[in-house]
Amino acid sequence: MDRKHIFAVVGARPNFMKVAPVMQALSATGRFKLSLVHTGQHYAPEMSDDFFRDLGMGKPDFHLEVGSASHAVQTARILERFEPVVLEQKPDFVLVAGDVNSTLACSLVAAKLLIPVGHIESGLRSRDRTMPEEVNRLVTDALSDILFTTSRDADENLVAEGVPKGKIFFVGNTMIDTLKRFESAARASDIAVRQGVERGRYLLVTLHRPSNVDSPEGLERVLTYLTEAARRMPVLFPVHPRTKASLERMGRWSALESMPALHLLPPLGYPDFLALMAQARAVLTDSGGVQEETTALQVPCLTLRPNTERPVTMTEGSNLIVSDDVAKHVSLLDDLLSGRVVPRDACPELWDGHAGERIAAVLVDQVR
Ligand code: UD1
Ligand code: UDP
Image (cartoon, rainbow, N blue to C red; front, side, top):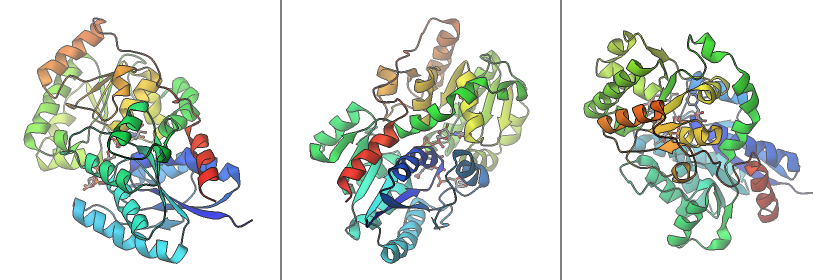
């Protein structure tokens, strides 16, 4: 049998957790030749290679090594380096995930070469174009031939934008497939104790959105919030490289280092980070993926953003968003810690650990 060749593209940290279960499910069908392409948008071992090892993904078949740069330069580098690989390998289908620059660039290359594109996590919309990810989502979805969605609201967004219903497949959340795979080990892990905190008695923080960390005003807001949080409970903060660079540039890193209840950590491997999420009293974040994972784990999540493209985490799950006003956030944190606010605890439809298999089933049917 002539097996169709599928390219699966990853580039930045959240892509690895979204694509790993799909690769596994596609491989299990025995129907495809699979190639994993890493653009190299993220490249530090703790933002890249460690995930390949921990998730059992094997090495990428093609590594574009684009590294960091401005949006235009990084996107252009991916375009330039992905096109020759596609021309030479002639894949029958290109699968992209999420909303990072690698997602947009690789879908654009494929679409121009008339190769069908599948987008994992289509249809999410924050309706906030100051977020670079929103632009990436809109363009990728406009170019995609098969749009895999994680929630019903995403289907509605796509239909409202004129995407034919026949191209949209509501399959659930592949990031939650990865979570389910590691969940029992995460709950049993002793990582909290090893970090010097008590299970259920600490706050976990992640921050990397440009709106929070790139400007002095954003950073000041975040630092005030962290200071207040650390007065209430020990805080573990694995620091994203963008955030660390910004803190150092603005001369604020050493002040954070000297705060006793704030534990600054490097970016963590997925199993350890998942364990710290699962055992936290609450998670404070601006990450997209972390909003979903805390919902799946039923751990309260306070999102430091004025909006979310993942409304299902608020309407059904444990996500709370007030605005980016620090005073409101601190008051919400107090309400949460005192039990005055109790987040929802339902798990959204089809966030059941089998989304990758559903994607594979669609591709068996559509890519022949
Ligand atoms: C990117 C994505 C964002 C996603 C995030 C996940 C875009 C536009 N942004 O943001 O949607 O939420 O990844 O983590 O695609 N850096 C390193 N080492 C690395 C990677 C980055 O030091 O391995 C530093 C560099 O200083 C770099 C900065 O982080 O300039 C930002 O990296 P970049 O990939 O441009 O954006 P992220 O903020 O990571
Ligand atoms: N994550 C991780 N280590 C960390 C922080 C996050 O493994 O130190 C994982 C997290 O569990 C989730 C993904 O990285 O699976 C989210 O990526 P990130 O927050 O960088 O990007 P976003 O989801 O905001 O695009």
